Image (tube, rainbow, N blue to C red; front, side):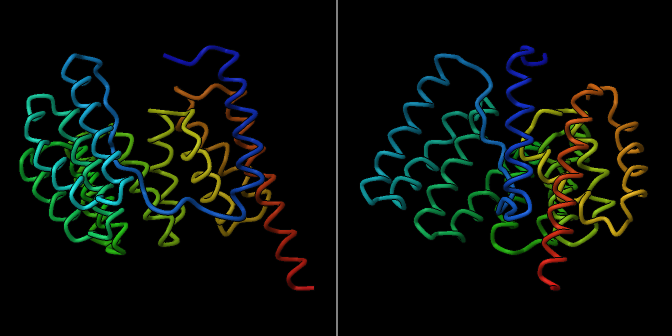
Amino acid sequence: MRPPTATRQLIRIFSVVLCVVALPLVRFAGVPRDSKVYAQTSESDAFQRRINQAYRQCRLGECANAAERLAASCEEFADELELFRSCIAHAQALFEKADRAERSLELAFTAQGRFPEDAGLMNNLGSTLMQMGRRSEALEWFRKSLVAEPDYFFGHYNTGYVLSDRGDFNAALEHYGAAFRIHPYHLRLQQEAAHAFVHLPVSDAQLDGQLDAWFARTAESVERNDFQLFEQVVRNTRAYLRNSHTNNDA
């Protein structure tokens, strides 16, 4: 279901401002884990209390202990896969706050082995490997998540991110396009797709054709006026980069 019209308009305005101002200066570090809790049940209420308790303990300087306690409790939520997946992701985040990256990775592998066909746990494992600089292994797990669930948003987003990071912008845009069809109003996706577009080694005239072709492949979920806004973000960012290069050369 699309957001209300007023909300969508605010999203568009905010996207333009943030993309044009921030994108040329910085890209987001890392790739997202799937840590959302989708169902609101009595079990998810208990889960949220457990998460809040762990973060309170971490704020008191005991992140490693909080992470271990939370990780040990994740099995309690194994009957609700979304809760289990989110529990693992939060425990990993706490391990990383405690500078225990290897323990975070161990937990990610253990969780993926517990539910070997789950795309979300494959993605979380890939995200952990990516944060550790193991990009080739991360890409392998992101691609596996798409085999398990071809329309998985995070699988496409993160595969596109790694390919873009490698400089394979055309391949990245194929995955960003697939992600757009699933979630066209995702701000970080808009920024990353714009990043890929402005780094294509094409002229401004050729860029028009690239944008038109890309829109044609995503048109079933993106309204024309929304895409025109995205086109403007790409053009403004491209102009910013071109002017910056000109000034640096001078």
